[in-house]
Image (cartoon, rainbow, N blue to C red):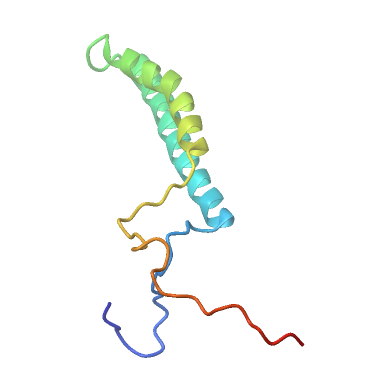
Length: 107
């Protein structure tokens, strides 16, 4: 990897370990909040369409179905663990290098 400039805040990933627990929880919470926000918008769309009688009669039902299904989707997405796979893999597995022999000097 090429370096950008000295003292840069950009870190280089050298492991396949996932992000920390706090970052994982924050990401899950954001996904849940966004999904539930979309659900709220679906409820508002149903209310507006019901009061204004705008569009075909089947249109509010699509928003009702979305508002009913989205909580399940939000919970499943929030419970999904962060399995980061960016194609970076450690090569070679076990080292092929010889190890040092055990010490014969007992002190």
